[in-house]
Amino acid sequence: MVSKVSAFADIAPEVAPASAMPVISVENLVHRYENRTALNGVSFDVRPAELFGLLGPNGSGKTTLFRILSTLMIPTAGRATIMGCDAAQEPARLRRQIGVVFQAQSVDLKLTAYENLWHQGHLYGLRGAALKKRIHEILSRVGLADRARELVETFSGGMQRRIELAKGLLHHPGVLLLDEPTTGLDPGARRDLWQYLQTLRDEEHVSVLVTTHLMEEAERCDRLAIMNEGNLVALGTPAELKSEIGGDVVLLDAAHDAGLLAERIRARFHVQTTVLENQVRMEREGAHRFVTEVVEAFPGEIEAISVSKPALEDVFIRRTGHKFWSDTNSNSEDAQSISADHSRR
Ligand code: ADP
Image (cartoon, rainbow, N blue to C red; front, side, top):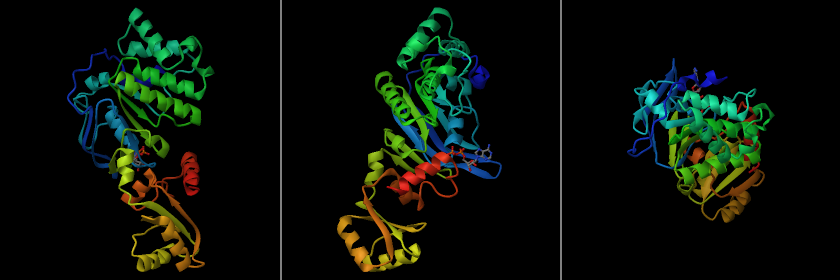
């Protein structure tokens, strides 16, 4: 099982150089799989001790970008550097600076927590008493010191994820990369993991880049890059991004033709509309009065209407003209349940 991290083998630990900012720099990154473009010229920086989120629906290019940053793939064009090391030119040097938690499980269930970390330590050139001390330290950090000698297969999903984290952090990386780390975890374990990432940022000043397709996780990031179909569509703090929405968000379900209704609302109220399947979406100050006027103006045309404060999904809709979860990207069970949650908003 240890072979899953073979790309990271034989790496002696190195003290991170006093890094020039930014910690991660992505410059005009392009990646094509044969004739499919997965990344279409993406640029952003991650600052020191920042909890940075890469938010996007399925197929938006998050994993591709993650794999380039973790040196598992060379981009078609553009450049990615972490702590000054170029991911394509100096992969071995870069790997010393980063801890990586992949989506797929890399812990060996048939080994104890301690044994998993012992093998991981050897991959990074750690040995003997120093490694033993570090394993105890990191297991305490992730709250599993008392379970060190137990088989990982006896752990809950959340505890197994914490061992993955411990593996990624064992060699004291300055940067931690995590690809959708909460997949398959229950809400309590998700909260714990995010709490831990925040502690890591605050107490150990580790810079964290995390990919997610969950809005509530994106809300917890210091800054976010929002991706859609290989493009960066928005970049900023969650609050900054939401503040670009003027007023409240009004969403109405059309009884008949949403396109036609949107046209008539535009003509009557001089408001911008977006049509999302059978819904019409608008941004509006003083939305409650507006809602009454619209309902009165179009009797029998509106099935339901809601007013809400701007959310990150609204930023996505504003920038792309479509919902975060569409028919083309919502084929996973997870996506469908989230889509259902959103439609109940
Ligand atoms: P995400 O992680 O946001 O779901 P991905 O980076 O996995 O996005 O995928 C981006 C695009 O690249 C998608 O259209 C996907 O189908 C395509 N893609 C990903 N991996 C491969 C591959 N190995 N071969 C061909 N196309 C791929």
